[in-house]
Image (cartoon, rainbow, N blue to C red; front, side, top):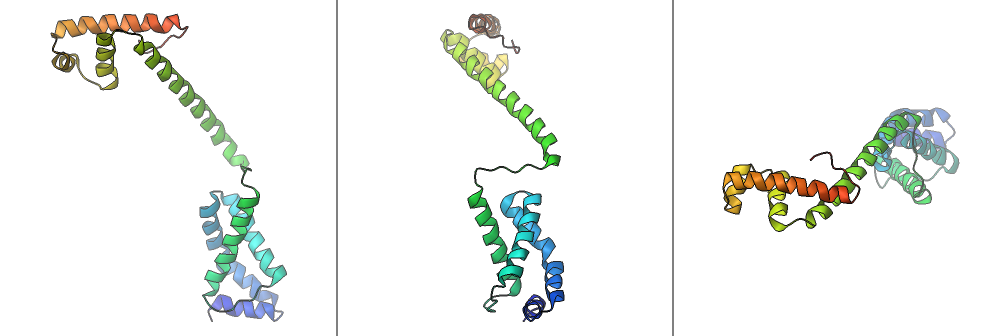
Length: 185
């Protein structure tokens, strides 16, 4: 038997110091393990405590078919999974995480607005003549230079520059028709 198993046997025989040793040996590792399952260090600490309480109150039998640590972590895993099943709609947030969540919400809102702008931009581009749409796509979405666009479209550099200027004006007008002002133009 390993040290944990000996300590557990002493606990079952009435020596509370045996359980104190188990907590001292396995607590930190169990918290980190459960944090990997839950994604929340505070919840992992609570579940570790629940695991130890379960062992103290129910005193399950350790059969010795595995190491004591494996047996103990299996109990902890089951405690965590039971908790997650019962609380699957609940999101736990620590007070320390609230500040970062506020920043995340602002980032999420900015990302949503940016996505909406992209959708509106694509809708407006669909209303442009094909050459305008093509030149805008190549320059702004594919990152081509005016010279590269001229090569792709088989036009002169001057024609592409003129086409790009007119396409941007046309796109801006299309966006403004929809009540949208795209700052990139």
